[in-house]
Figure (cartoon, helix red, strand yellow):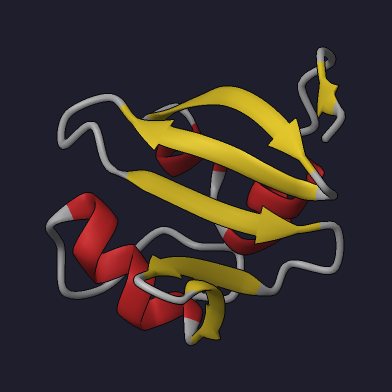
Length: 86
């Protein structure tokens, strides 16, 4: 299992405005999935290179709606300030 050492912010930047991207730390890339950790909640947001959002379940990674996962990870109901608006 290869873990990428160079940060890739593109998937996150396509979904969130810069001020919201600043709330995350890029942690690592594993099998094509970027792992970002929220600086306050310490929860992970996982995105593939196409911006698909993945959540860790008991049976492995599962594709989920970004808005749903954004709420869980950030503790906010909506991602106001996103490039695509609220």
